[in-house]
Image 1: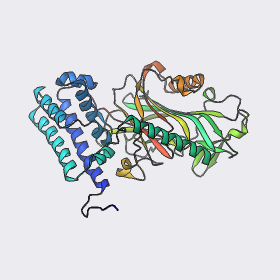
Image 2: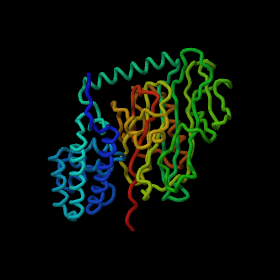
Image 3: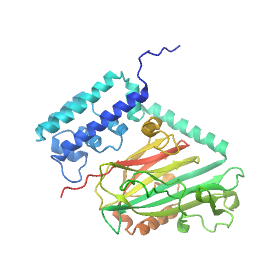
Image 4: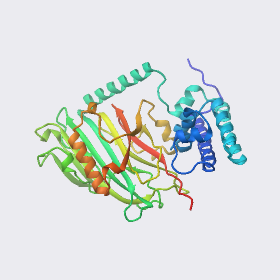
Length: 411
């Protein structure tokens, strides 16, 4: 029988207090860095400028650029590391006020850990970090695969891979603004028993009435404009009744029926251009940006690529998965409590080409990328690719790539 302490602090409150303190630390560290670092810098640059080892420099840089409190906490060094960081800031010539603000923010965060009696397990949950051992990672992968197989058997439908790809580039009409291209491929979609037409695309919803500059919540599966089918990156010679567009109360929907196609498996790609959605640099009310896609159908692979135009200031994205259909809407500040804590591969890659092990049609994927680059009017070689890859992602979830918008350069 478990006994709960009478005055135990709810985990949601601990999460909120720790998250607020983590964001205060981030603002303090960013202000300190602004006094001695200019332009696009990475972890190595921070380490060299402050005279720190590479790992501590990377952690400090990650705290300053992390798009959410969970990533800040995950990057937080130990007490010795934080002391070295504060000392390094002072040696590098950062003002006394800025150094003291960083030291105070670090102290406050440690005190909150103690005051809330947050256990190591709870802090790890707040940080949403990786699993501790190879055995835990193997167990997690086995569970994800079992969940996938069960979902396929119960629902009777499966995707080999879902490729959600976004191109981010300066708007042609105004380079201070950002334009986006959303390219979405469902590869190897099939049903294992007759299910009739299934919704495969809903289009991209953009809240044009939102406050200017807020392009931070773009939903690739919301209900709005007429979707654009990319024939060159889709199954050839589709029968007329295998895919159709319908108009309903929630907008235009694309439906597909793999059983109606002779090959019994479909690859379907859609692309949309969203022009001048908002500014690239941070505004007082909007410090971060995010793109998301829904994981609704059981699938073997999710590849979520964000391709940043090389002319844009460098950013440090982070990938995450949440157990919620409409991320950030139903749960507000508590959305992070629904964060999936399994292993997620998320990093910049040399090329947007997919690994051969993914077994995705290379020609169709190349056609998809070519189409997206043409829509935004830039050569594919002009983009840096951040990739989040998950094998057997749990459903029903939402995958998110988020980053801090860079500050506007000083005049």
